Image (cartoon, rainbow, N blue to C red):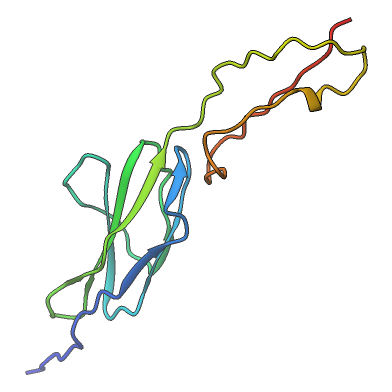
Length: 143
């Protein structure tokens, strides 16, 4: 008769490289300081159900295509020991920014003159989030 002795399950600490992004982004998740076999779980925004997502210490999330808070955690089991659950990592997913309209003030310029100094605009975000599509404004002087 053999007796299996396993070290206690230890979930360690879960982390993500990006925790705030626009729709369509991904993030890399990692687990450090664990003992046992890893089973990552994912919870979609507005859901209370955890679904299996992967089994490696480090992996890239699926494309996060829904606005809201996406959650990841790791369940770790060592041999026959009870499972241990890591901290929850929350990924905030924002909608893509949308350029609605811009009414430039009337200005008198000479054909071929640089108009960049006449246009001013601002963005809602202090810095672009990963996965956000950059919006550009172009202007051309008419003859």
